[in-house]
Image 1 (cartoon, rainbow, N blue to C red):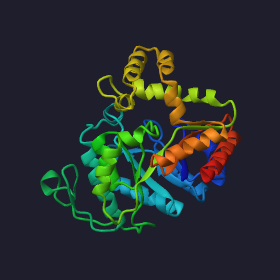
Image 2: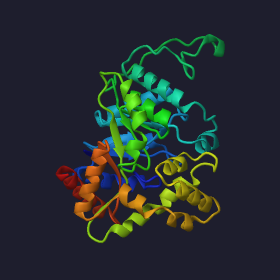
Image 3: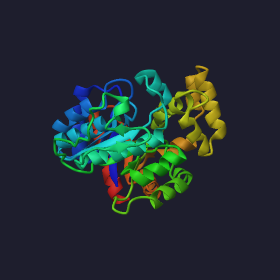
Image 4: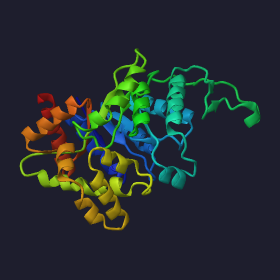
Length: 348
């Protein structure tokens, strides 16, 4: 079982590199570099590629609407070259508030777009002439939509790998099914062992049934806060703000994917309450409404024995890589936490 973590959206790019190198030495396998509506992810990924030696550097995630499919393929290939074959392309649909409000493009047909983007990227990386006539992307552009001079091209540089891993962040039944069919990894949100795996089982099974036999097994990247030690349970409360933000305020009242997901886990009343409180400006009350049971079972926070039990629960639920938020007030504390988690993963 591998260990991954996500960089802070508002992190100091210069200051974080030394910590990443220490985390790498402590046993971190994957580093996700986020992209929302601040700095872009590939710039930092390139910087990390030059400063690290073994950790896998993944976008976490690139919105599928903000770049052309071929640019996504070119970016991933360039990062894979810089890192010596340690890049992963994390993709996701984001949400209409960011896509239409920040990028100014329509939020439409995310599943259809992801299908075509994955196909286009793999064609580019194989250095085949790109001739894609899909519903959402036509490459080359048909003559009646441009000046008529486009022709099928192939990548002029040779990628380190002809098949760079693609991870998809997906939540809905159809999108999870597509992920299980086509992607190399799945990045779910709010994963609750014993509940989430059952919730998504049908979608995962349906997708796996259509998966090409020559593709490797689907990797599952899931987890939450990790803190190992006695009397650390209070640290679970540190994820209340971000949980309340996603469940209560991420998106509109009528369309919040995370609220719908949280509700589907058996927290229907709590999901509505959290959203009502958050959208009325009562953020502290919204945080308090998050069930303690959810925080306990979705995190890896407690004594070594408890954390080891949670590691086993995530593994039994199909998780192949623990994607964790590492606790600790200082970089040294966080490195120690990853080192302890690595030891517990090997023991569990």
